Image 1 (cartoon, one colour):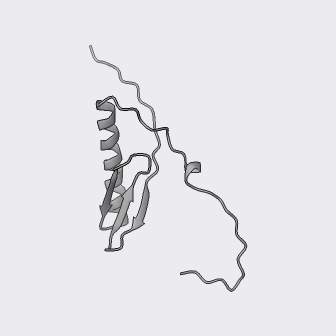
Image 2 (image 1 turned 60 degrees about the vertical axis):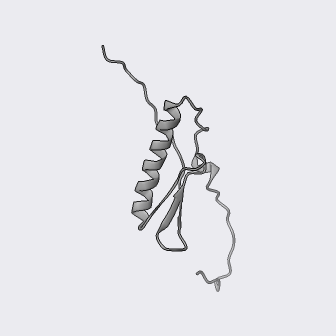
Length: 90
């Protein structure tokens, strides 16, 4: 008899930044120690996805509690700022 395992979607936010030495650095703020890198942005995205999945699988296997689900609202703020037309951007 097969055991049916119910699943649900769970959202984690990953932060991806250019690394000083080149390439990209990626980490998940909700999962301490869950970090990786990649030579390209796409590689960093793929690597952090694998790292998050692996970390969560290990936590579930060990019976550890998962952090509360992240929502974009936790990390993204809309802050309107009026800029003069002569403002320059780097």
